[in-house]
Figure 1: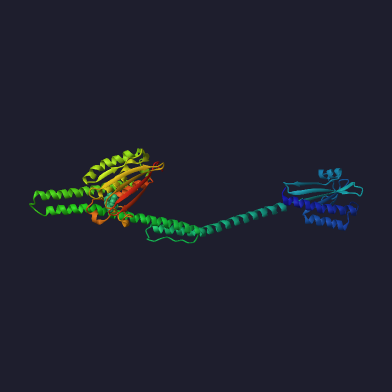
Figure 2: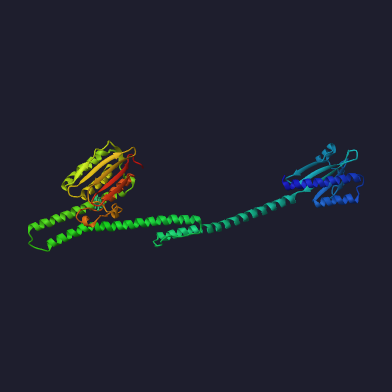
Length: 435
Ligand SMILES: Nc1ncnc2c1ncn2[C@@H]1O[C@H](COP(=O)(O)OP(=O)(O)O)[C@@H](O)[C@H]1O
Ligand SMILES: [Mg+2]
């Protein structure tokens, strides 16, 4: 039974109990024509759209608000039960939608002298509840729709600045040369655009350095070619030259070819080093052997240049390194020591270690590097002082390669130099490779 029906039932019950009291005090069963009681009875039946029957102790219907069953005998089980127990009953017929209640009419001594029976249709209540339910459903659906529509527009509105960020990024991607993007609507968009702008300027810096690198490379590769062209042209332009001249020019051309070769092989080493650290081929390596190997290779060049290579005794040190890349770094340093030196000079190589690193020092007594050049020597193609860079051969890539190799090993390279006194390079490399 739903709540509305039980509410109705209890209110009817109250009314009826009050009515029963007045029936008892008025002695209605003895005075069926009492106008006040009759009007109260019909009022009650009208108000609740129900039917009231009153039966006397002989189960005879003495009053029927519908005036249909008056005088008949009513022996329904509710009436009988009320007579025997002296208590009222109440039941709800769900299928036919009506409430049936009985109330005892008692004499002053408490004997049951009659029964009031009331039946009320609940059709209307059930229908009302259905209507209410339907209306409720409509309201819920409308509210849902409203929320959805508002949500749709609100989200569109909230997302707008992010769309602007997307458009700005797309503009940059499409190649509009905006310096930076700016969408200061939310803190979030500011954070995104700032991060994007930082990335953008890094990309631009990378792009610039790439362009610069390409133009440097082309220039460097062209220089020997130009010389060769000039040499060859001057031979071609003249006839009947002595063989010695041809030989001399050919030697010059060979030198230029060697130079071109050196530049290309340096470029290749550098490109290999530019790849990620994953390309490192790490192995446990006995460092004194690695250094001795380099010195063995460079000693003839030193002797040719009248330079003494001094090698200090080295401790037994093992380290996890990429042997070929690190050799490249050290041999570049020693080669520089030999190249930028003075007649009869020396280059001293030493190695020490502690529990975390090993240190390699390459010192020379050569021409030295002016303080203002020391910041640039690691740049690609940078060659120091033009006065000696024309007489001493080089590509300007050696130290760039050395530093890349050292940095890949998470090492450090430092320089200390005084003009006309000498130069010392110190390298620090971790003993254990860190990923
Ligand atoms: N030991 C050194 N003594 C003096 N100058 C040096 C030394 N090592 C490097 N430099 C300077 O640094 C420059 C860059 O060195 P590097 O990158 O090896 O190129 P390269 O040796 O081909 O010129 C050299 O041109 C030279 O001016
Ligand atoms: Mg060099």
